[in-house]
Length: 298
Ligand code: NAD
Image (tube, rainbow, N blue to C red; front, side, top):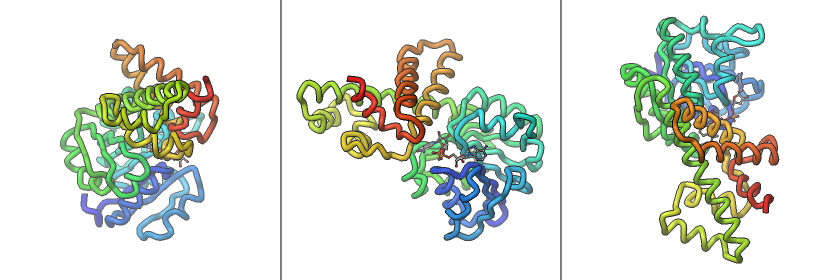
């Protein structure tokens, strides 16, 4: 995908979408963007090649690749197929173009979308990301990719502008499954660390020292290494990944595990904890604030 000859539509310009689109623009791609936030164009005043569309249909007009970076599958399904009497954009996608869903979506919905889009002659690729806003800014996201291997090969040069570790995992929906499972394992680690550190503190221990021990021992995980000191014990709770998105990811993972008829006791408990924390802390809470929620309960 030569930047000079590839027109990109980028739908969903939030915390992650803005820096990802920036990296495509810096690489020379032409990007037409759309977001429900009408002021998002201001975030692109410092780069050339960006055009703000006033609707998703305008954004995808003539696009070779449509990238979605939206909150969840219900929004994506409504965007593609329509909802509440509003038509979807799927029928307007350019023939033989690529639809790359980089959101953390449901693997079940992605498989269905792949079937319907393939029947229409559109190439579907699921390419969710891991790494957060910081890595989106410096173009070093981990990107997991599913879909036809030949479509992956074609999209790879474009994905390389946004990520460093790019791993092909299998057919359409496979990447969204791996992403949801990864985020379940990660959230379970966060919840476990929150509960353990809170209990340690109640026992009179210094949680900084306890976390140091975890990091030198087998209790070490991504939260103990990167989140406990930076966002949790100092109670800044500002990692840039919302609790609402963590709750959504856990619900996707639980739904996926259950749809495979597999044992899901811990996943169920993680969903209940994320749900209770999200309801208590409200809109805008960061996922690291689960530690504050745990503290408030004892
Ligand atoms: P965000 O809430 O900051 O951005 C989502 C954007 O989508 C918003 O700007 C919103 O206005 C827009 N939007 C919602 N509905 C829309 C619609 N119908 N049409 C057009 N725009 C619409 O979320 P984010 O943090 O950028 O996350 C996006 C996706 O990436 C999610 O699926 C999330 O799970 C995933 N993700 C986020 C992170 C992170 O650290 N924030 C990391 C990895 C993956």
